[in-house]
Every structure is written in structure tokens, then in C-alpha cells.
Image 1 (cartoon, rainbow over the protein chains, first blue to last red):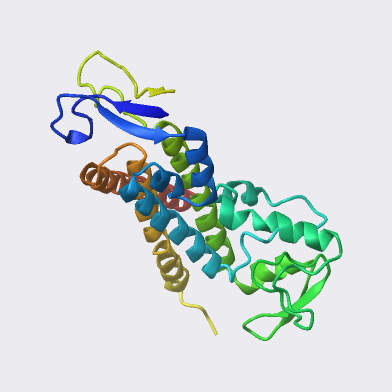
Image 2 (cartoon, rainbow over the protein chains, first blue to last red; image 1 turned 30 degrees about the vertical axis):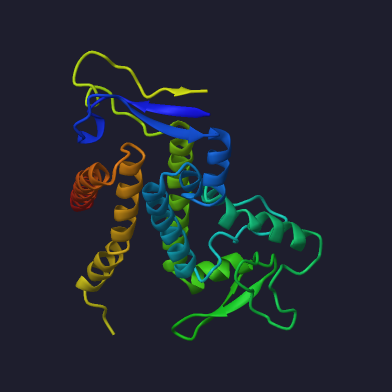
Length: 205
Length: 70
């Protein structure tokens, strides 16, 4: 069992004693926080913060997915390198990790999960085809794109990019949440103590 | 048909609204990783959100200035 200790009077609460936070099993809490933002905090009994993290991060993530028509996280073309944006999006583990599974299914010449074989359009959560496709823009002009990812970017411009940014920021924010679940809040030195005692929050096993 | 000169500016300004939910989410999450209780989290988030908006404004002013000088 581990605890994080916040210095007295931190959080602007009149406290004479340091605040102890039960972190339970920090590794398990961090893993849960990666799988579902806020779940690690719920496991530790820090319900308010858990719900706050869940709403903020999953809200940003799924709004980004909505803006990008469900493709922004699953947009790495099979046979090519993963998009660099995906490494940021992977911070939201449970919602982003299936992209690897879908991509490997396509690379093994299998249909992605949820894809209708009769449907020409890619389903949500399915990676793009690595072949030339044509698209018609708002002015009625037909253009040929080198692959389906390029078509998505053109078709949903600029929302594909905005959605990508939303999901990337959600993933990066969850890295902070994982750290918080593992070791407790990041105490701002000086402000916390108000004197020369720069004792940080301490996690003890 | 000639596109009015103000249209791209209006379009860019409309795009800025997409930053508002992000500012809220980022400030709340960052504040919550530095505090433990809800009241300090909210006041920290409010200060941080103002800081982000001011920073964005200054950055936008700098870019506009560079564009004007170019």
C-alpha cells in the first residue's frame, strides 16, 4: 500500500497536518488510468477527480473522433508507419489501442472488425485503404487522391485536423492523469510550504 | 465572383471557437493534477484558463505583427 503526502495547508485548506492520500497499488492505478481515464482514481477512492478526468478527457477524445468522422485515431495506413499523431493519441489507451488490432487485421488480408464487405466506405474504427481513390469536392470537381487517408483529409477539411488535435491533446492529458494516479498530485514547491522547506509529496511503499 | 477580403478572417475567427472546449479540458485536467480538492482545482483551473487565453492572444498578436511587417 502506498500513500502520497501533501504538505500542511496545501490546497488552501486550513490543515495543521499533512494530507495523506491512499494510492493503494500505484502500478495498478496507473494501468487502470491508462485503460480508461479516471478509472485509476476511482479505484483509489478519489471519485471526484476520477469523474472529472473521465469527462474532460473522454469528452475531448470522442468530440475529436466525431469531428474527424470517426477516422482520426484509426488513420494509420496499413503497410506504412504509424502516424506520429497516434503516439500521442495512444495515451487514451482503451479507446486508441484497438487501432493496432484493426491495422494488423488489414495487414493480414482480413476485414477490419465492423466493416461491411459490401460497403465501399470505410466503417468507423477501420484503417484507410492504401490505394488510389477519387473524391468529389464541394464545387463538384473530381480529384484523385493517392490513398484513402488523403481523401479523408480532403473530404473533412479542416475538421480532420481539428479532430486529430483534440484526440492528441486528450492522449497527452491522460499521461498527466496516469502520473497523478501513480504518485499523487504534483505539489508546487514554495507555494505549498510558504517557507524554505521544499519537501515534495512522497509516495511510500 | 470575387471573395470579400474579410471572409478568410471571419473563417479563421470561427475556427478559434474550437479551442474553447480544449482550453476548458486542459485547464481542468492540469489543475486537477496539482490539487486534490474540488474548490482549489476550480480556482486553479480558472487562473490557468485565463493564462492560456492571454498566451494565445499574445501569440496571435505576434503572428499578426509579423504578417503586417512582411
